[in-house]
Image 1 (cartoon, rainbow, N blue to C red):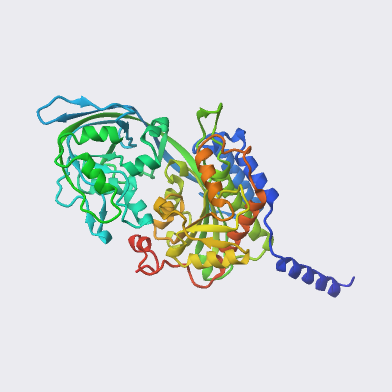
Image 2 (cartoon, rainbow, N blue to C red; image 1 turned 60 degrees about the vertical axis):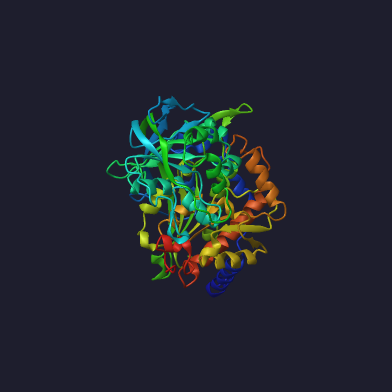
Length: 538
């Protein structure tokens, strides 16, 4: 064969290879999940040696797929220094004016709070009831209006008003949001009181099962734990039985307060000083640790667009070794979230296979300590290894249910930015429908790692398999029988072909976000885009 003919054949082969669509591998999905969710990985708890092995595994895949390191000092790992803390039962007692203090009962009336800022918490202060503890200008609600809480302990209801939009309600109902609001007004401590709705969704009795698990927050370069609003110390979560003791002699009855809390239409929530003082004596066992995010990039090809970064993320950690259930103590985390990491790795593989560099830079990010409160994602979003202003979009993968032949996907937050259009078009190429959030009251948009990017103004979506074709039943079954349990392991039914298809749609989304000339933008006036000063919202 002469040189000209050989060159012609080579060009034809290359063109054919590029024209052939990439088909992610079910076997590769199976291999990733099988490694990460093996018993030998002991549940990949953040900070554990097994988590470090999982991080090394992901880094090795990044090397194989040609990703450049995007961690610290030319490595694939971004070290996250941690402060750990474990609360004790402690003692909380209530004293009416002129009366003797009566202790609350641990596990029946209260579960203690914890803080990484103080080993010993001793308070003796009046109690003030501040409704939901919500300050929401857009809803014309300020639960602190007219209240003096300086140096006092505020009692706030769990959650937020039912008449708030679901995802916005989840933001305002978040414990950190409330703690920051209380601290800004000088409160010394905060107590969260259960409502009937919270009791039905997450029974108070279950809190006793894992109340003393090790909690983590990231630590800055000066050694300060990241704990926004920490001057308002989390004192306790109090159940309905304990609530009756809190409201003994109150100017408004507990029944009336709970009736207002359950209203689906706007009502004026009562707010008042309670005729009680609380004496508090709590201890926290504080320590230090570290874990790592894993980051790799495919550098963009466009001279201008390569300065912008699209981040694909998923959490690598799970819950480690814990209380035995049916004789098993290893919380393997196969669906949650070995499946998401496997998906992300196959998307990286797809970029390598196609051999066509994206126009924007694409980062693949496996984050640590999601199960501790989105800690690794928060650290990265606030301390990224690329210029913060360069991050233009985040697509997050967390717990896709891969036990059935899915025919639709859900992209939480897709209706809030132009990322939604990319999701729609990518799904259509694979014959998949995009279903709106099937249960917006759950506020899922605020409950996984993408939300830490949102809080930095970055438009983001959180992708899962959808409710059609048996998906709703599969999701319900998983959540009720396997979620955060040892049997989320390799013995369950896993449809690896479905995993490959989920990787394919994620690749299509990532490819469009990376190659489309217009940068992703928040929809004008969007609540989260406006709140966090994101591009396009104002």
